Length: 435
Ligand code: 9WN
Image 1 (cartoon, rainbow, N blue to C red):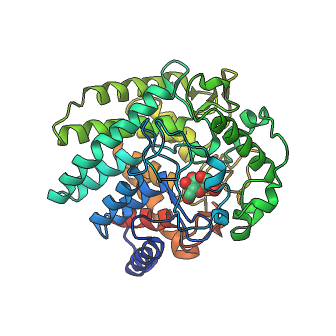
Image 2: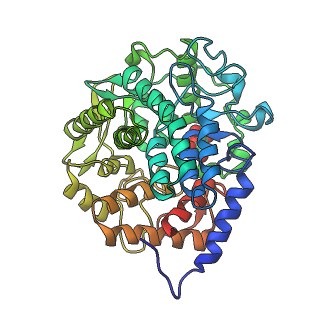
């Protein structure tokens, strides 16, 4: 759905600037999310970046994903961050040293430095998106190479991260991609932050972004404690609920089920049996719809696996099951169009319920509009034939970027640009909504 504007922003200029942003952040094999704040390769960023990059250089799009999958662990996990050895240890906190030792058996390939976490598995959906739009021999070859690796990643998630009757769990807020979402306040409250590690002094993010737009030191102390517990057991996934943080996230599960459907389509393309993908996508979709829906909130919610309790917070993650067939679509559409996520002047989809007392419209995942989550809902709306609504979201993204630049996130009401600038997935996904 092209965004048309005769009087609005200069779309050709926006496209040029988006391409320049991706060029600026390309590091030879992969793209950094943004130069100073995130100087390494991030997992779900690379999937979004590849989708945009495919409109410029399909080869580079596949190279991006190949670089990420080259760091895949022996146990199948695809790491949240692949550290660039040329970047100094203290350029990002927590840097490579904090994550060591990484396991030898089942860990990353020799000489490759990563974290031990994962991020939402949008990659298979990204590969299918690119393959459908840019058919050809090079694409077929790339799909043949990437399919088995993506399948191994999903095998890891379904086999090793299965919790709470067939749902898939995450063990760190960073794995949700929505780090300081209000959904994680309750589960994190129960985490003992341990001794203060002099966090403020170590945090490099505070040199590159306003402290009021970032997670707090109290959040970081707990993030570190949760990593340390997982690291100290060698990143083993046995008895996940005994870790200090273990939750089921509706966005992570919805994206996994959506990507699993994509994996079935990719399997058919390469002549592999799609059977297990079809079955797993169906089963996870069923579990999401039957276990995570909260009728009182009108959206899906997270589960704290350690307590067995649902987390009654209305966040953008709770709208992500709109990507899936079936479920409570009419209710979700009402919630998306209602006062929690939309109002006159609100642009894109805010990350958290605008009417909630603890919404903070400038702070990271606690209210601002992000382009990647807005893009996921744009895709979902298009898939369900909700064209007008989808076009409104696409136009919002264009407007936000035209007014404030390729920012990391935006104030949902004023449109003020927040976090870092020259942000890769903002540029990549803008190119995609304009395609
Ligand atoms: C930790 C890179 C990443 C995104 C995440 C976003 C932010 C990292 C951080 O940046 O998280 O992974 O240091 O804050 O929350 O979604 O992938 O852009």
